[in-house]
Image (cartoon, rainbow, N blue to C red; front, side, top):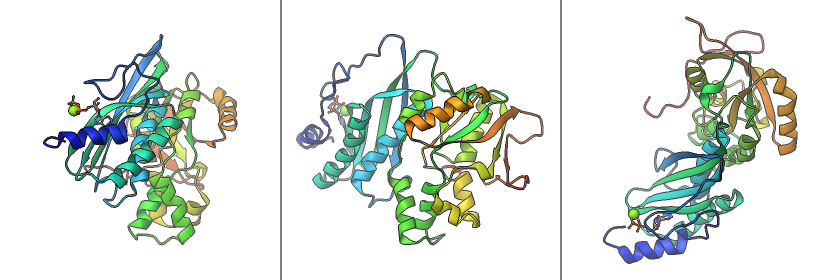
Amino acid sequence: MKGNTLTEFELIKRYFTHPAPGARLGVGDDAALVRAARGMEIAVSADMLVCGTHFFADAEPGQLGHKALAVNLSDMAAMGATPRWATLSLALPRVAPHWLRAFSGGFMKLARKHGVDLVGGDTTRGPLNICVQIMGEVPAGQALRRDGARIGDEVWVSGQIGDAALALVALGKRIRLKPLELAAVTRRLHQPTPRVALGVALRKIAHCAIDISDGLCADLGHICERSGVAVTVNFDRLPISPVLRRYLDRPVARAALLAGGDDYELCFTAAPVRHQVILNVARRLGLALACVGSVQRAGRGKPQLTVLAGNGARMDVTSGGFDHFG
Ligand code: ADP
Ligand code: MG
């Protein structure tokens, strides 16, 4: 925070300097030093949360700290990488100790849970903006890329999807939920659970993976595009919560399921012979994995993504996912 060096120094020391046992050198120097284990590649990714775009100004800081790291852990999960080190770059409108304590508490609690070291970052004055960069390790050649889907693969989705977007719709008063229902789905929006253990378990099993951050249709579209394939999904097989099921006759709820994002579940493809192995992974992790569709050859004039209703009719998915620039 230029012009306020002491405050910046104190702030970093108090809230963002923690032991970094997995790094050679952590916070406090001009750069951190990290070393990948032999045979490992380093997966690097960054995700920014901007006030007004990704969260409300009055967002609870502990949840914000959690989410800022969670969305990055989700990218590691989607690559099949084990998250190891993170940096945190913050623009803060003011130095508010209670906010910083809660924010760093939420961030560090999740970091410790996943054995991630906060090794550096930057702190400056400005409109509230949180940028986390994350680094993880994955055995060379085993990363789960978007371009690996093969014709004949089954398409899988973890956990349940659509709740986070349903919460957004409800907070925007476009649908009315009962208080307990709202509380349940809002938790999914503010405190997503990154599927890190699943990503690691899927190495050498899945052909490709993506985390559902922009919405199922948009993210499956990325897989189709990058892998040069088409995908068919059965609407009735999509894994949803009892709350979402109760409102599924409403177009906004169906849109939340197909095109809403922010769930941070994993979508992946694997050969049908792996079906039972994947169900075993689900049992071992205590995480539901649903087989929701299949991968086909792409064809000229053929839609990349087809969603079939229970009666076999094609559903309209032109609404796509959430596009920041749309
Ligand atoms: P420099 O003067 O080299 O830009 P800074 O004063 O910005 O260094 O930061 C000092 C140290 O604190 C560095 O090691 C930096 O990585 C770390 N740091 C700064 N802000 C944060 C933050 N929000 N979270 C974690 N580490 C931070
Ligand atoms: Mg700096």
